[in-house]
Length: 85
Image 1: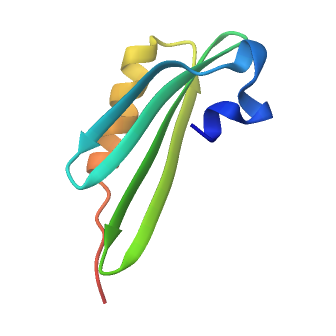
Image 2 (image 1 turned 135 degrees about the vertical axis):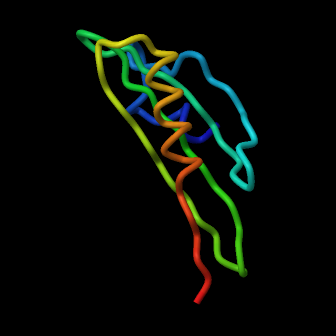
């Protein structure tokens, strides 16, 4: 909610296709921003492990289909490994 009120995402940069997802241990907010020439797809992913809050922001901008961009980001997120020392 706070991110959607940010001036960075106001007017024509308002997020579209907003989804709340659970991807393994990650709580994810996925959204797109229409930009000149294409789409900027974003994932904000959070989780807590070993008492540590982990926050990732993955994004990709392209003229390719928004669904393809989102799937690419989801694949990247699924590949993230968190190793405790």
